[in-house]
Length: 370
Image (cartoon, rainbow, N blue to C red; front, side):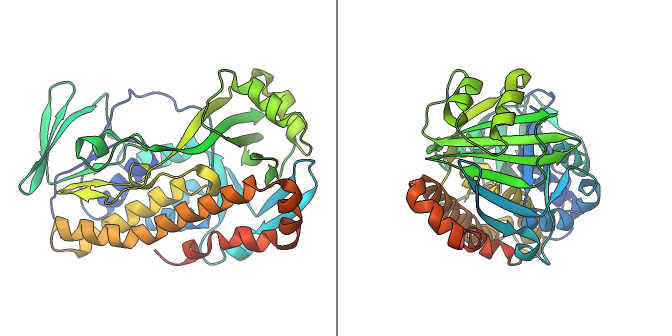
């Protein structure tokens, strides 16, 4: 279908939706992009992009605009709760020939993707109904407007309304984890990705450039606390390393807490409705692969639409190519969460001996080409 004039609607203007819009523009399509939320500043949070995300950004022609942003990350350091070393992962060796690892503010990547997607997003456009038509999709929005498209792409996250309206699946299920996020200025000096592993909980700090430090923590469970800052002090008050200074610096900083969700579906498309990104295959953020998988989805979808003779063939080819990688991410995410949940007395000696190899193995398949 190279050079076709397909009418495409992308629902969702996050990383997945904007990456898909960018990829489709690169193959000559001009998708409409809608977002149910009004335009607003994104909440301040950080983002770690492993090497496979950098490779996907190159394919999208966006590696240049991203290169000045954030900070390169050269190694992952794992410490025990006291702050003593467990193991390290050399990211240059792991991702050599694939791409650099980078940490940056999420809003900065979003701006790059928005520009790359053409910058036109229809905000406040919530989808009310999705009708599968012969050779197309009918869409009605909450404001009463309608449209008919050759392809509808649901990029609206783990709680996707498109997924429900197209009968591709219901609500996500809890991944058994609550996560905490904050961005500090003037906190402790941390030069590399640094995680402290405790008893069914972990605390991560990543420099994201400009003197800012992205702090991410998680604990096993599903109940989101009313006071995330107080809960962090309760959970991690006895930790060592940079954690005490981070906790001290959180006094005037917003701390966001949320339950993480998983999405596991029998299929990702029905008729001419397709799900991408977290709408199709959300996992807990333990491996930091959410953005990378969304960027890869965009690249592969554009390839599939270009190579296939029909939309239906393209969607089948896309899902066939993407499922093995997203399944790998889901399974390795669960593996790493289980490692974290092993009692430290058993886990920590193992990680001191083989942790670098164990954690590096979690990305082995993702080093391979798309």
